[in-house]
Structure formats: structure tokens, C-alpha cells
Image 1 (tube, helix red, strand yellow):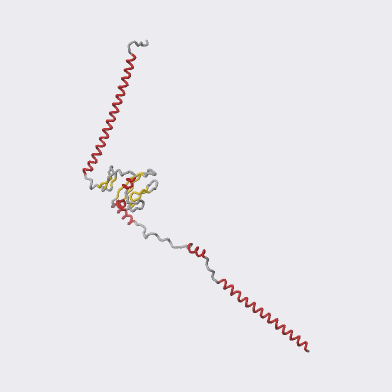
Image 2: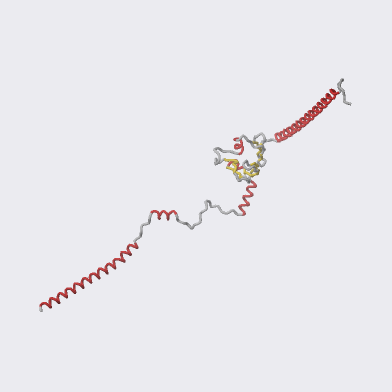
Length: 244
């Protein structure tokens, strides 16, 4: 009787032991399954630190959809503004300059305001080659000292032959600059008379030269005639026999 009881007890203990092992293994597997998705989700939701290169790239490659702001707050000109500007230009004191561009030999005329010529910096553009020429510079942009066209030309040994500033200023042929108010009528008349006298002297000199040339031609003709006469006399000398 004792042996069957022991056999039954041993079988019962083995069955309970196997059930405990299977229960523990199931519990461990369920715990691991619960921890695994939590750890995966935790790792996936953790923000990765941005790299230095990507941050710099995003900083300097930002695209703005806003239109660029103008440098000035100027508004587009209207017809009234254009009319006012035209009236102002018509009323302001100005003079016209005609020059020949040395690079392309193109001759053109330009209108320059008196205020810009004596107070600012004036550039004119050649219509032929599009080169810009400095006429005056009082803002020291292109030159070290304040200069006008007279100063610029004097550096190259040149002068303005003749010019006029709306009847207020004149450039004379000797290079001097005078105002019309300072120049009296006698001076102007004297200058005109001097020019006429120079023209008359030039015409007289030309006539004298023509007369001298005519006299030289007459002298040459007389010399030729004398030479021919001498040759004839030599032929007709005594003792000379003529052919029958």
C-alpha cells in the first residue's frame, strides 16, 4: 500500500512543478511583450538632437515669400510731377555744352544746370560709345579737389574757346571768363572791331601774297624770253653758215 501512495505523491509533485514552470514562463513572456513595445515607442518618440550642419543649412537657406523693400520711399512719378519738373528745368539757369568724344569722335550737345556745374558733380554720357565724361566735381567723388571744366582742361593745357551761360557768362577766345554785366558795350564793340581788323589784315596779306606770286610768274616769263633771245643771237653770229 505504501508504494502506490508514494507513486501518486511523486506524480502530483511533478505535475505541480511543471505547471509552475509553465506559468512562470508565460508570465515572463507576457512581461517581455509588454516592455518591448513600450521601449520601442519610447525610443522612437525620443527627439534626436539636430546636427550642426543641418541647423546652419536651415539658417542660411531660409526662403522668404515677402517682396523686397525698396531702398527709398519714392513713389512713381505722375503727370503733374513731370510737368512740374519740366517747368523747373525751363526756369532754372543752365547752359549748353558741345564737345567731341575722343574715344569715338562723336560730337554731341548737352544741357547742364548752373547749380550742378558750380555746386555738385556733373557727368555727361556720350550717345555714341556710352562713355561718361566728368564736367565738374565739387563733391570730390572723382577728383581730389573741387574742379570745373576749366580746371580739367587747364591740366591738359587746353581752354574753352567760346561759351555762353544764358547771357550771364561768356568764355572768350583768350581763355578768360567774364560776365556779360561786367563786359561793357565798348569792350564788346572793341572785340568785334578787333576781329574785323584781323579778318581785313588776313585778306590784305592774302592779296599781297597773290600779287607776289603773279610778279614771280612774270619774272620767270621774262627770264625765259631773254634766254630764248640769247639763243637766237648765238645762232645768228657772223661766220655761222646756215643750211640751204
